[in-house]
Image 1 (cartoon, rainbow, N blue to C red):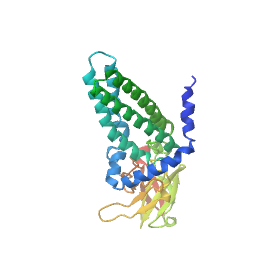
Image 2: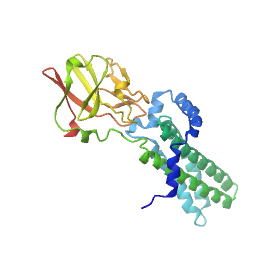
Image 3: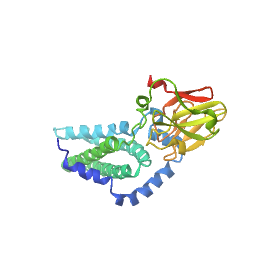
Image 4: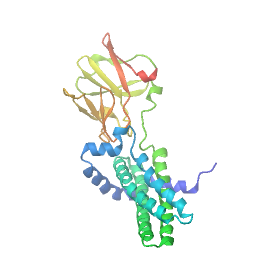
Length: 293
């Protein structure tokens, strides 16, 4: 089956370098506004284990879809106006969470994401104007603006789908590690060859690993960052204290993971890193991934 002609235009957005000068200051503004890591983590969806944005967009889309249906039926003016207003209000957390995620995307993803955001902003402006017109009793123009907004938000949703499913933004990029590593214990090197107190790259079954040695103890995580595949072994080691475990910070977007559990300490990543069990046998370091069994 042939794809829709418009898909080629969407794919060309990935190469639209002319969008980059606009994206740069917006990204800098986002990073400045999200200096508080707890706020950034909430907007990314770290406490929920997956991005927040896809969940909160249901409010404006659901409200506006309902308004579009009611506008086609008689004597629903009051209900439609209320739904339009609810959609505009619900767009605020949707925009904030999307903005936070967008600020940590790769270049080609960022370009599509920027047009996605501008489309949704246009939809919000159209629906805001629709609400004003409805409040003034001008139902015909209010409905027309509403349907225009609905068309724009559907286009924005199409771009969001392309961003998520074609460009894998927001996906867990290590979900398949358990399928790539065979069950059981695997020797990955000698303990004496692993430097103490620094990040070290290993591999098992062609899966890259990042290791931290502390004395005779070795902790091992999958090396590919679950957010956007950054190489964790090139990142920053955050030493453990009496209250916290040692962590590794991704060099690309500063996601932080616990070496002890692989759990996300700070986003933008929301999916944990696969965490390997380790043991030392006759001076050799062996690893095992429980989920592989």
